[in-house]
Image 1 (cartoon, rainbow, N blue to C red):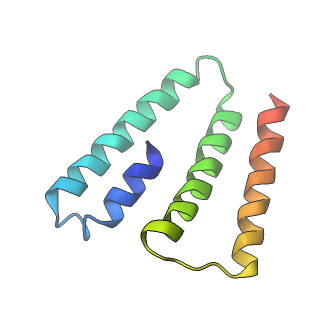
Image 2 (cartoon, rainbow, N blue to C red):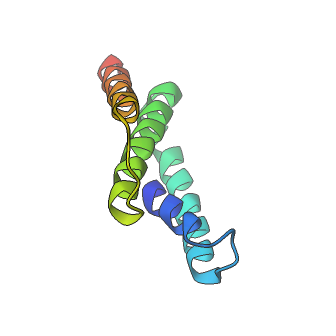
Image 3 (spheres, helix red, strand yellow):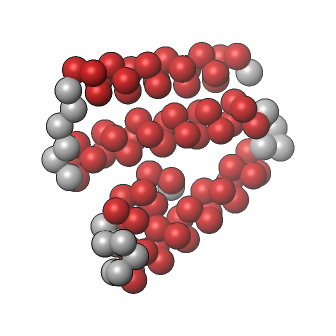
Amino acid sequence: MDVAANLLLKHSDGLRRPLPAVGGIALILMAFTLLGIALHSVPLGVAYAVWGGLGIILTALLSLRVDHVRFTARGWAGLGLILGSVLLMHLSH
């Protein structure tokens, strides 16, 4: 949900295109609502690390497909480090 919101907001042209802007904002509100519900059973640090890390990874990977972004070896290494961090945070719970 958060990833779709990021893509919609990018394509809203600085909130000048109403449909993607409203869709992106609505998805952000739903994502935060679901995060709040998840916090009933998952510690805040773990939940936010997993949500944020996976959001970064998925947004970056979708930008490869949608916007034809290219990553250098450092970029791929950075995504790998984020993935490793997310896995460690998840396993710590």
